[in-house]
Amino acid sequence: MRTLIISDIHANLTALKAVLEAAEPFDRVWCLGDVVGYGPDPNECIEVLRDLTNLACIKGNHDAAILREIDIITFNFEARASLVWLDGVLKPENLKWLRSNPERLVFDDVTIVHGSPRNPVWEYVMDLGTARENMSDFDTRICIVGHTHIPGVYQVEGETQETTKNRRIANGKAFKISGTKAIINPGSVGQPRDHNPRASYLIYDDDGDEWHYHRVAYDFEAVQERIRAAGLPERHANRLKDGW
Image 1 (tube, rainbow, N blue to C red):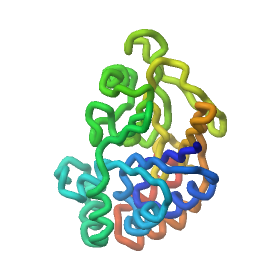
Image 2: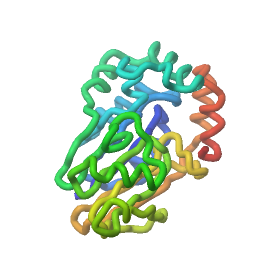
Image 3: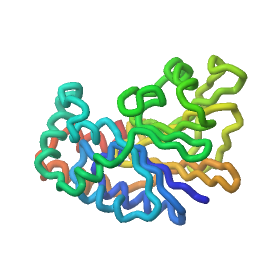
């Protein structure tokens, strides 16, 4: 079975459509949250996801904030501005769909969360120390996280979590998890932050137990125009060009 794994769409419909087209064929989709926030197309992105067959989606911190589950004062000024705008445009049925998404899901030997295993919605796994501390907080072999907008793999290469190492992954090349445990991040569909503007995603082929990391270009300039037309912060538009 081929599983498309996406995260941090952030209301970027153009990037989402580019990923769905490039990733075909796939049998199911795991979405790691933050469907909304920053971008200009929140309703459209949710509706595309709702129409997918065999979708599992969890809740991200921006999703939780618009549901009043996280106080928006914890976000920076630009993110708060986006959430205030979002509160006025999100359709009730799409708000209901966001509310229905859990914070954690488990599929066989894979756990999916947005932030980290020990704090599913909010914590960032951005360094070896945090990755090592989180290895004991999931019971499966793999935990897939988003939130950082930066793709990568942290893999336990010995008998204890102290042997965790940061592993590089290359665009278009398959890789396998040989260690006892791993945390994998697919990067961001709608707002990459690794200085690569192309939308990021993973394909997991459980037939060969292979992971495939991919990037796809999309018309970010069209998204920038919609961000500006909506009156959203200029920063949200500017960062799409260079992926920061």
